[in-house]
Image 1 (tube, helix red, strand yellow):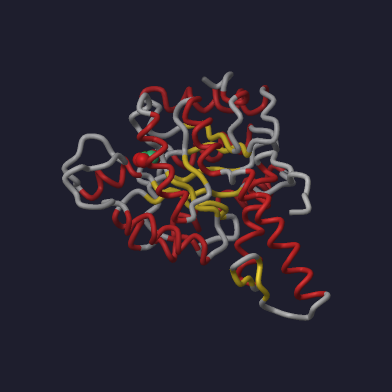
Image 2 (cartoon, rainbow, N blue to C red):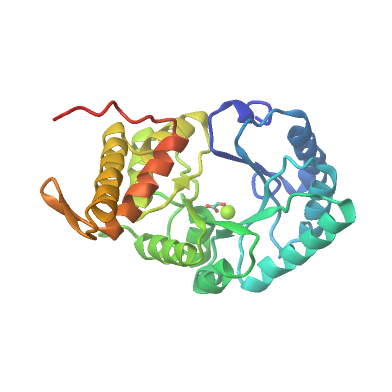
Length: 292
Ligand code: GLV
Ligand code: MG
């Protein structure tokens, strides 16, 4: 798995020391992760390691071992089950000391998982806790466990519930993340073989405004890239809106103009630039502009 990960076309990869590693393997897993970071070509994927949560005995050694022994190719650490802003501050302070001791040039970023009830209650303070924070992530499996929901698979549709039982959670995390300029990511979908259901679930958070979702399997990477990237049509339309708006505000000195049968203004520009930056990241190029 560690060998295959760099080849899958994911925007970001995290190597896990937490729940996918058995307690008896926690210590030996650290060296496997360091070796994978230092020996593989990770292309332009963001590279991250998920350490164990602060309520275990492993966190401090995970952080010290990984950051001291990894090359600067390591971009970020992911902290799971974050319950309070203090947990982020503690990781930030530890990282600052390691970076200074090792003479590390680039700072290590932090991704935080919200997957407990206390974490959700404190998500606004958590998202504002450190300039190192880059991303906030929802963890549906642990969250279902923390809520004591009567389910045996976290993060899938509960047919008995009339609506989406995670709608409030999705929205609350998204707002806290955006208010602090963070990327906001949806967590895992555990029924790996059910790709249709994966598309359904990914589309929900995509529609709300999330930037992406975890993939546990190569087929989910492909599905994620499809769902969270704009279509060619959206990409072209976003460019057209930006062009029309630039002409309106620059040449015509007008803030709001008609674009086809709708009005566009500064808010339209803000919406459009997101489609352009996401499309460029996905490798889209603007279609040739025609006269009609
Ligand atoms: C991810 O870590 C989750 O618990 O869903
Ligand atoms: Mg979890």
